[in-house]
Length: 286
Ligand SMILES: [Zn+2]
Image 1 (cartoon, rainbow, N blue to C red):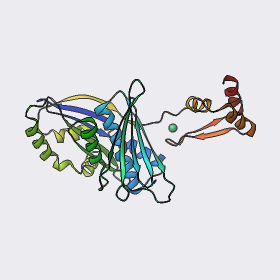
Image 2: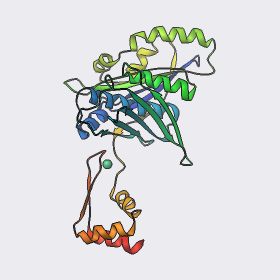
Image 3: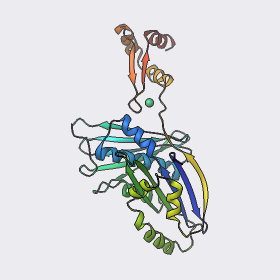
Image 4: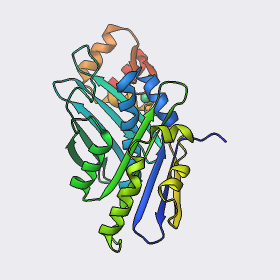
């Protein structure tokens, strides 16, 4: 049976740990293709997409989240969005320079945001460590901004014959008895899970197999699961909504130019054509 991108959760029966594991292989491959990424940048994009999915599923399953790797020296940024419906998308916004940014060469920050039901943003920023390791940056964020003790590993191979992308968050639950001892045991166990790329490749990224290996020998209970897929929320309606907030004079200028407007979505590559008649319609309604 082939796996689909999904998220699974489980909890140890002693109430000490919860794990959220994700397979993001197909989503990452679709984003890497849509953004035309290769090499380290493709790898970092895949890990950032997994970060966004795991962050939402761990902290706020019903909220929209966005994670941004912002490179220093104006070297651009990587953006990943994850939506409660499961759709996930990514974007490279390059800097003015030619060279593609590389987390191992250029310092960067990781910014984590979620949109609260009242439209306020909850935002936290951490430095990505010098090694460029996003798993460590994500863990640091959880500790500093959310006061959650967790062990996180991300892994990806988006190019080549055996693609795989995914990761997990193991969270020490606040009600854990003898938390320090439980944490020591789990830390030792997860030493084998620091680098999970090959493990993911071996079982097609299956989140259930990942969880079975992490909790091996510990009684645990499966919780809910959900699907993840590459997707974008762009639409003609959204394009028209964006245009409708332009100044009247700007819309008039577009009408005077006399050419249909072509607008492309940077995330998914979809392109929208806005006819002159539609632009005139905006003038009438504004
Ligand atoms: Zn789009």
